[in-house]
Length: 127
Image 1 (tube, rainbow, N blue to C red):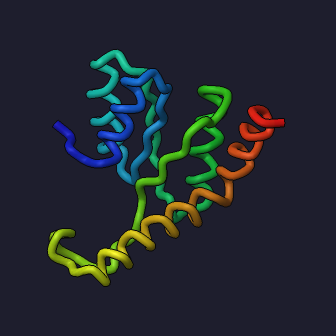
Image 2: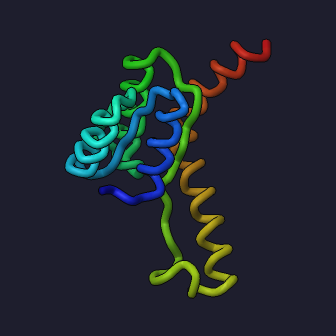
């Protein structure tokens, strides 16, 4: 059983009816997650993506649009950590640094290619 935050997010969104694309740096991780979720009859697609590589991010978004025609929600679960060890024992300063790095890294990495799809969706919804 995979017990990771990203996997739990993907499972929950899919159980709520979302068509979900998952990714990981490692093909084995992608395949394990896809196999488990497809056994639950959830609409899941998986591909390898290393979010620090621009070409991988572009390919991930292009494959998402090709498979499902649009992007409604982008969950960036990638981050760097300024501290190692149990998150409950890192102290307030390192916890704040961790949260800031998670938000910044995710936005910075995904923004370059994903924002054009998000803006298209916002335009369709509100204008």
